[in-house]
Length: 496
Image (cartoon, rainbow, N blue to C red; front, side):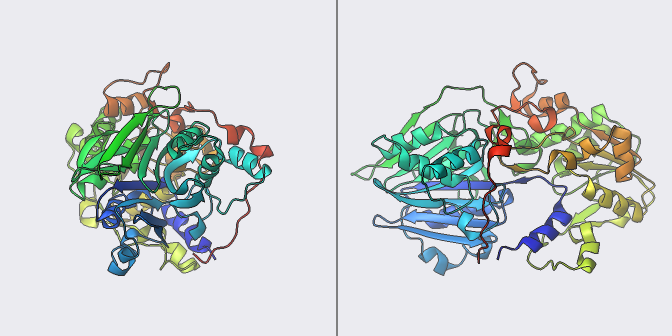
């Protein structure tokens, strides 16, 4: 069975955090393809901790290993890597937003087509995925997973084009939403990014061999060179030729759209040492804290981050305000899901399993508590109380992003709209009372835009995807518009 009870407890402990659904990595033409992919996925572990998978091709057959749990729990084993021979590989690390937590949904997904085998992994969500699934099932298709990635395999199989590349491009043209995607065939590594560039994807090079991955930190871990970002709406086809050389071809099969990279990559998801869209994430987060200090100053004795997401912003707030920065909360990095038994006693520990107050830095002081975002507010309540229990005289909460009013449909695991803190209270004062703080302030949308892109938001043509703050969705939401007509997916328990 799926570990639903463990996931439920995890959500109670970490329920005030948004989750990205996955990271992707692929390399072509390298003798250590599987090992490099495992290292790349390890660097992308923050994008998904539920499961990981790797597919390789050794010139004769495709080989796959899919495991529930962390990359390091499985792919550091030489015996596991020995099962993944070959000179080309793609991998995926997953946090589920579409489909239940089960081994059958772990990517990459593989299918045998008339032209040969193909494996696909993607980061993001299709906003018409359920609509397309309903159509292909009504036409007689058989789906083996509840992942929207499988829809792409069916669209490729149904395409009337001759080459795999053209079939892939045809399939991509039919899906909508936010995604970065990798496909592996017997000779090709194909990378694609959605027309708005909502989800990130970069191209790198190691020993002259092409690499694609979700973030630059995955290039850094293997010593690869960053080449460029995959452009929004672009498909890049890397193919091994008969003489062993690799050709690289780029195309844009759909009409170009303005690039609108997801702002939450900068607020929370991307690793601080990554460069996303040409911008260093750590610098952007420090800028958020600096702008927050300008917009919401307060007299206090110490600036304390909610680790780890709030740390760069707290440093920026401290530098701008002149208030000393201290690690007033210590994070336990070894909290996992598997040992957390679903008992009331363990539930009562709540946030203390993950965070502990550093009393020496808090007692008797007026504390500015800086967090990257607030979703439901339930964790904020516990952290504020923890700071008070440690002897703080005052607790002033400052959030380095705007209030979240709207759910996401592009790969971020968000609660229903009515469960978001901003929609449960009439005003900021009510929210402040709920979390138990002396004051509460959020960074403005213009302050966030200036921190990331250097200029204020253009309401006529927003530079980034920001619908969770503004309600301005960059694409159609076909599955949501037709939700009443889409039958609920069947869920099969899995021993994975």
